[in-house]
Amino acid sequence: MTFKETVKGLIDEALLEKPSIFLVDLKVTDAFKVLVDLDGDTGVTLQDCIDVSRAIESNLDREAQDFSLEVASVGVGSPLQMIRQYKKNVGRTLIVTTQTEKIEAELVEANEDFIILSWEAREPKKVGKGKETVVKEQKIPYVDIKEAIVTVTF
Image (cartoon, rainbow, N blue to C red; front, side, top):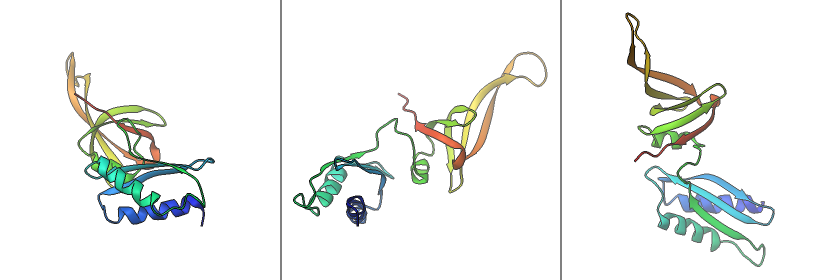
């Protein structure tokens, strides 16, 4: 079993006690720097990060392999990587980049295959002069999404 597989197993074991928290990314560099990114259905607390860090650190032998460890929550502005992240952000505004366009819109639905975005746009009236506000929706399969980031509005 590789060092990374061992660390992954320890993270999985630690997260069994915290079903609302999930692993987004695990990296182990050539210098054995372990980077763990967590997310949660209702967010990630500092205590969650501490608990996972301790679960990893207390079960690895530094004599066998020296390493450094960073456990953190995914930050604001980090791209969404998992379907579970899309589902927890329904109702929030995303900036979604596909192969052909970039859309800033509200995420109104996320299922196992695609997301649905909704936004208002100004378009020419069908009859007469001027413009009118119309509500647009677009269904985007996950395979077409290059990047999706939650925007923070104040």
